[in-house]
Amino acid sequence: MEGQEQIPWQALRYLTGEVVYGGRVTDSWDRRCLNCILQMFYTPEILQEGHRFSADGIYHIISENMDQVQCVNYIESLPEYDLPDIFGMHPDAEKTFLESQSQLFMETVVSIQPRLSISGQLTRGGKSSHEIVLEVALDILKRVPRNVGDEKLPEGIERVKAPKITLAELLTLPLWIGYVQSINGFDSLANSALLTVLRQEIDRFNHLLEVILKSIRSLCFAVKGQSILTVSLEEVYNSCLNMKVPKLWKLCSYESCKPLGSWIDDLIQRVNFFSTWSDNLIRVAQQKLRIIAKEQGKRLEQIMQPISEQPGKTYQAQPCAFWLSGFFFPQGFLTAVLQNHARQHGIPVDTLTFTYYVQQPSRDDSLVDVTRKASACDSAFSQDESNFGDGVLVFGLYLDGAHWNAVGQSIEESKPGKRYCKMPSIHFLPVKIEKNKKVDELEEEVQEAYECPVYRTSQRAGILSATGLSTNFVTSVILPSQHPFSHWVTRGVALLCQLDD
Image 1 (cartoon, one colour):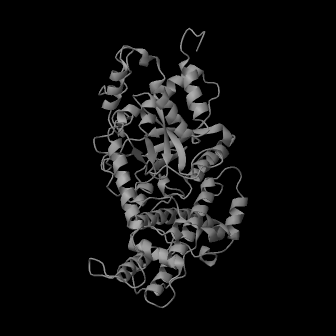
Image 2 (tube, rainbow, N blue to C red; image 1 turned 30 degrees about the vertical axis):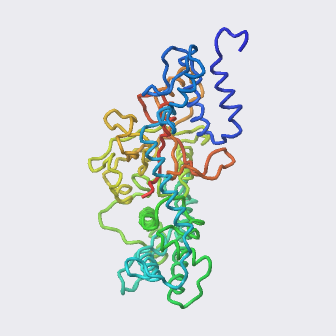
Image 3 (cartoon, one colour; image 1 turned 90 degrees about the horizontal axis):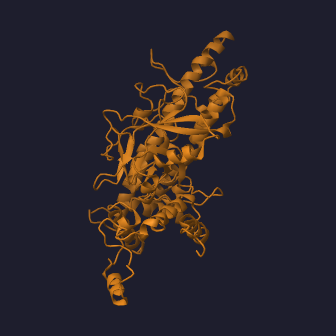
């Protein structure tokens, strides 16, 4: 500090944020938040008379003419718990924190209760624990499909036709392989990277469904006394009784904080989304293969069991809009979109990035009422959606800690008592990275926009990967803003793929 005409605020912020705390705060988004908080205190404004750190004026700099007694009295007059405003957080942040603490307390109380045995204790409703678990298990068996593409038939009706062809079987047909090899250049059906993503997602969901159904069937046998209740089945038993997702399922599942009932509903929607996508893609493929088979003097029915088609209906190989929340690995989906654009235009994929355009909400969409449940398939395969050409339309995201102003097309303060806001669809458009932009232009853009991180769940926490990012992190979306980006950073504003209900 000696010999300096001015206080080097930027150097002090770097020393504290990157050197002192740098090794302790490893997540890059947490470091961004830390630096924005430090910027509120390492600033020339704190030297001005009457400067306050909070809107209520409670927190302020101790003046030079205050003696020791006055300093002690001021310190003792400060609130026992720091208010959210001093850290730049929304007033509702304290309510959210207290709710999470209450939830943690209740979960701790439940966890220390004596573990239920297989004796079948009675509950308040008059049903034994066995009856409750068996009821939950049978409901899951009744509702959950066997695999992606499985058609749930009414009870008592048997299949009279051979099972329809699956995507994996289609891709191994000699007729399909010959069609792919005959293509020159990029083909949106055969050469699409989304085809690989779809097949991988189907494999993951099929494995998850197999684990669920196998464990539920074994649990039913054990509850009825027809088999032994193993340690893993006992954990499934207790989870079904407490309406939690069993750990056995979580090991091969996507990240989620939902209770068991909502988790099953969400799983069925995910399976239906990929089933519809797969069926539509197969219908488009079989239309092409039918022509090739006819040229070879064959009928398509002799080669495969085709999927039924509605007369006069046009099918698309991919959805009109994509449910980002429905993917096991959404990062892979976004990378595939960039790969398709790179292949189509003959440019390196590492020179591409996304630009984002938030669409106007539909008349039936509510940005405030996040409790309204809409079918993902209706949103994804609606014929009313426009064809954007390049890029993809993404839906199913929720804004946490802020509200989306559809009229002003920017983020604003969240409504009182409304932590979440349902986001309209967002157009992810691949564009080339501009390397020659001037520094002042980039700084101006940053001030007028907020780089909003996208997380899988509200926990936002996961395993730190080799890239320095959490496995819960998906990507970041640039959203227009009327406030400096630091305003939203300290408020912890983020986009979530799913809520906890």
